[in-house]
Every structure is written in structure tokens, then in C-alpha cells.
Amino acid sequence: MRMNIRQICRALVLVAALAFVPSGARGAAPNSGEHWVATWMAAPVAGGPTDVFRNQTVRMVVHTSIGGKRLRVEISNALGKRALVIGAAHVAIQSKDASIVPGSDRALTFDGSPSVKIPPGALFVSDPVDLEVAPLSALAVSLYVPDPTGPASGHPLASQATYISGRGNFTAAETMPHKWTTHSWYWLSGIDVKAGADTSAIVALGDSITDGANSTANANRSWPAQLAARLQANPATAHLAVANAGISGNRILHDHDGPSALARFDRDVLARAGVKYLIVLEGINDLGFPHLPGAYGQQEVTAEDLIAGLRQIIDRAHAHGIKVFGCTLTPYEGAMYYSKEGEAKREAINHWIRTSGAFDGVIDFDAAVRDPQHPLRFLPANDSGDHLHPGDTGYKAMAAAVKLSLFP
Image 1 (cartoon, rainbow, N blue to C red):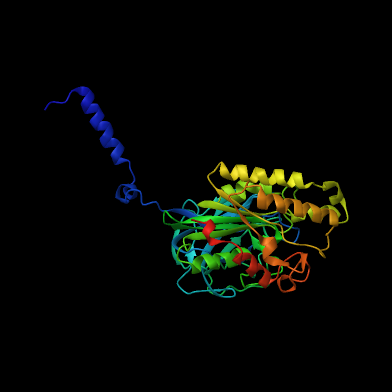
Image 2: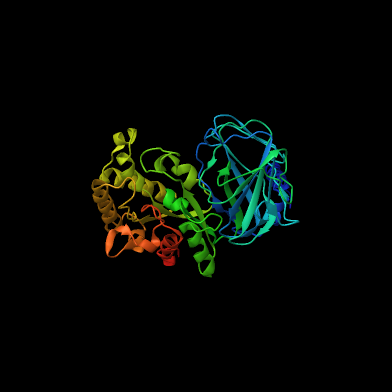
């Protein structure tokens, strides 16, 4: 059969198009569905005057929720005031303290380069590396910064030891020599793993109670960490990751150590890889801070103000297909900023959370931790001692209060 000029041209265009399809894409199974999912995160906060580094290596330990065989690392300069130069970056399986499992070390690259310069307000995601990571395992991420950093974007309540060297690049060292230890993360804001089509992430958006304040250090006792362990123990939910987006001192409507929940929502929730569910526990600081000394008194809010803020979070999440679960605010009588006015607002907000139907589901943290004989206070066994934050037992009760049936 003869082909006319138009048919010949169409055939040549088709051949040329196929020639430029990447070989990996041509050989991939159709609709394999693999995608990136956040197995861990830390919400960035602006650094203080002591959070400065130069010609040093920082080795940070983080704990995964789900596992995988391929991962990538997110480094954030979100709240930095100057460009951040990462001279070298490595990821490995932690063995103990500042040591890594021999043979597990992987050098990270950024668009093929071992170093990267991150502008103020920006983040970079590393190229993927092959590393088999088990669920609920410990990773060590080592970053070398050759130049003065200025106050570092980071996360001050890691509840996990971070190891800081003297001068030099020790990112590949099996046991990193260190001069200082802190309990903060610096610049590290996320780790994603490549996972199957049915795998997704739950983001926990909150304040210090979500961050894990007053839980045992190096033990992963925050309620999101204990929820991750519950999910992994149940075969029906083992495909779900938990990303902790708590920031101590966080509020819905006003900034504090970090941006308000509304201001950081896009970065800390919508930008997370594979997010399908959102758990929101925010508002107790909005009620309490106006009763602290200083300028906070000018930031008084009503229950209606906070409900409107929560509705904004729901609407913005729903616009991206994310289901939202609202958490009742936990008791705080006896805390440093408790007031009867704040308590009345807490009860009004909790009533709305339980009854409005605005959320896709409700998690009753208040009922899980309060003292039945004194419902304005924590049960003593659940209290860390400051009457605001749970202890390890209280966080366990919170994790147990999350019905796994919420995540079909």
C-alpha cells in the first residue's frame, strides 16, 4: 500500500516521539502506581543566635514510620536569612549514638552534584538513593556546612540527640567524632520513601503536645510516634505513614516560635508527599498565651475566631482531597497560663468539634487523658507534671484513642 506525503510525515513524527521516551518509562510496568510518601518530617522553625555553624558536620537521627527501598531527603532553608551551602550530605542506618551501620552509608546528591546552595526561604530535595529502610527504624542524616550559616532553620524540639562535630567534613564517618550534642534538628525537614500505590501519609498538625514535649528523649514516645507503631502492628494499616508537623508554641491565628498553623499550612501539610489524611490538634496556645505576661495580652481570641481558623484548615485540605480529623483540646487546669475564660472557650470549641460535623471524623483526646473525677485536669498518670503536656503514658493514651477505622 502506498503512503501519501501526509501519512509519511505522521509516521515520522510518531517514530521521533517514541525515540525520546526515556528507556525506563518504556520498560516500566503500566500503572505501577509507585509514588513518594513522607515517612518522616519536621516542621521548620527560625533558628536562634546560638544555632550557627561553620566548617562543621551535623549528624541527626530520625525515625521512620513506613519503610522502603528507595528514599530522598529534604533540606530546608525556609526561615533562613542567607543562602545555605551544604558541602556534603549523607544518609545511613543508625547503629548507636553517632555511629552508623557499616555498609549502609549513602552519599546524597542534588541534581547530580554532591553540594548545593539553597536560597533563603527555599528547600531542596535530594536525588533518590537506594537504601533498604525498615519501618520504625533509625536513620542518621549527616550534613556538612563549610560556610557560616547564620541562625539555622531547624526544629528545636527533636527529643532526639543530634551530634555536632568540630571543624571538618565527617559525613561519611562510621562513628562521627563530635564535640557537642543537642536535641534539635537543623535544616532537615523531610524524608520520603518510594512506596506502592496504596501507601499514603497521615500528617499530624499541632503544637507542643503533638511535637512530644516532656516525652522521654531518644525513645519515640510522642503520640504521633506511638500512633505510627500502632499502624505498623496492624497489617490492615501498615501502608500508612505518620508525619509529625507539630511545633512547640504553635497557634492557629498568631505566630510564635514558628509561623501560625494557617501560615504554614501549605508547606507543612499540602507539600508533604503522599498525604491523604490530616489530624489537627491546635488551639490551646491561642487560649493560653493572652494570659501570659507581656504583649500576648493584645492577642486575645474568641472561640468563634478559632473555629473559623479550623474551618479554613478543613476547607483548604478538602480542596486537595485530604480527609481531616479534628481533635478535642486536652485539659489544662493548673498550667501556667490557665484561666477560667480560656477554659470556657476550650469547652465551647470541643463541643463544636464533637457535634458540628465539620470534620471527617473526631478524635477525642480530651476524653482520653482527663481525670474522670476532675475533668478539667489530666489524670495524674497521664500528666507530665506541668498540667499542660502529657507524659509518656498520656501520649500512649492519645495514640490509643485514634480509631484505626478512620483510615480505610
